[in-house]
Each structure stands twice: as C-alpha cells, then as structure tokens.
Amino acid sequence: MRLLRKVKSIEVKRCFVISDYLSQQKHLGKRFITKLSKAKRIILGLPETLLDKIIKGGYKKRFEAYNKLDWYIGVVKTDEVGVWKRAGGLRLAWTHNSLKETGDIVAQILDKNPKQLTKRSRMAIPGILKNSLSIIKKEKYLFPIILPGGTMGRKGLKRMKGDIDDGCMRSIALAVSGKKIIQAYIGKKNKLRK
Image (cartoon, rainbow, N blue to C red; front, top):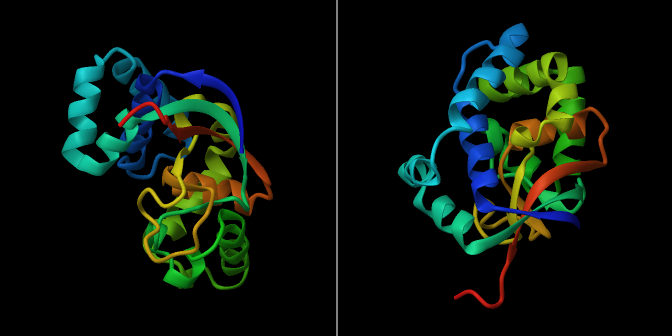
C-alpha cells in the first residue's frame, strides 16, 4: 500500500453513497455515465450529516469505521487486500485469500463456466468489464474503500493488509482485467484517537 494524499472523510462517504446508489440500479449498461453524473450531481451536494445518516442506516459498523480512521487516496497491490467473505455471492473458498486470487479464479470461471457464479456476480463483473472498466480505473468516487486488515467483512478468512469494505465487484473486475495495482481510498488508524 502506498498513500498518496490525505483526504477528508466526507470524500469517502460520498464515494460510498454514490457507488451504493449505482449498485442498486438495474441494467445500467450504456446508461452508466448518465447515472454516474446524476448521482454525483445530487450526492456531492448533500451535507455530511445526511451522508452519515444514510451510511449509519445501512450498517452502523461501517459508519463508525469511516469516522474513526484517517483517510488517504493511494494505491494497493491486488495481492495485499481481500474482498468481503462471499462477495457478490461468490463461493467462500474463492474469497478466502487476496483480491488477486479471487480475480484469477473468477477469470477462469467466466472463461469456462459462468453459470457457477451467482446472478449478482455473473451480471456485475462482466457488465463492469464491458461498460465501465475505463471509468472505474480513474473516477475517484468509484474507487474501492479499504479498511485496515481485520476490521470487518473478512472474519475467518486470511488476514490481509487491507479489507475492501466497498467496491468488491469493481475491484474483482479490475483484477480479472489483469490490473495488479488499483487506486483506492485507504483508511488508517490514528494512534491519537480512541
């Protein structure tokens, strides 16, 4: 992991709410850019208190983690972070190790027998690869959000340097495409905070 610059937590919260909104849209396809623009136009104007309410309403531990950490935009290697346990309905064994290993497995399955994937991952990953891969590589509000290893989402799995809290499907798509390093929001513990 390499930290490039510090950012305010509101940027991470905006990223989460924008990507969460997009993930709930059905069959984005070629409408992806239009929907992303609309989401940014609305969500970037929301006060942090409302973003907090949205995040806290979905998962209180995420809300607490986002507010306790110092945040950076940085880069991570796909072999030093892991996705959520059973991300996108993937088999547990496929998500046990690093994002790189998950990406390698998913790439093989997409090539040989895509029906082994659940509907969500079978739709999301190829859809990202086809319609939005170039955008998610550079759009900061679609970067994965990475928490310190062991924070949440990977209980019982191999301990990694970081856990992808949000953006697992996007990250897997990047790994499937061959990316070895991805841009991300990286949360770090501040030793001065309790």
